[in-house]
Length: 173
Image 1 (cartoon, helix red, strand yellow):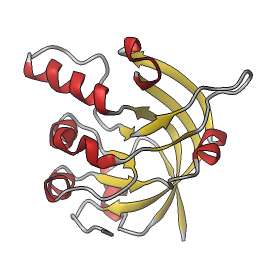
Image 2 (cartoon, helix red, strand yellow):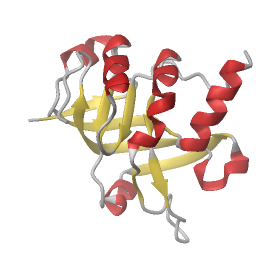
Image 3 (cartoon, one colour):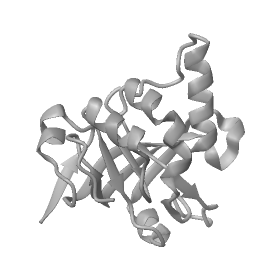
């Protein structure tokens, strides 16, 4: 069964979702990879204000490609999530409620997802063109000097994912 979710996630919805559930996400998701995580970590350690409120957000680890003329976005499939593992407990402590990427996460991340009542959602590798078709709009929110790896916001419709780690710490890996 596939469940359609309007973002942001609510606590009640997150508590109902279990591993292997298929979701179609609708609404706004943030995009941030390695360098965005490093910057958020640095700002937090310095006690500086973050450029966006992460509370309740979904964060996608996207491998960006240049958009062709007339397209909203280029191919935008998931990138390997493990590179973000060192930063994930901090990101979750800042209020992120869903992480979207591909591949397994380490045990510390699994524990942190459960501790913060969050989710890790697996996107489908090799489906960047499919995901691009699900993006209605995109805008850079911060760190524009990072080019295609800047902190972005995507508005998505029927964005397909599978729950890989649920809020209880159950994992498909």
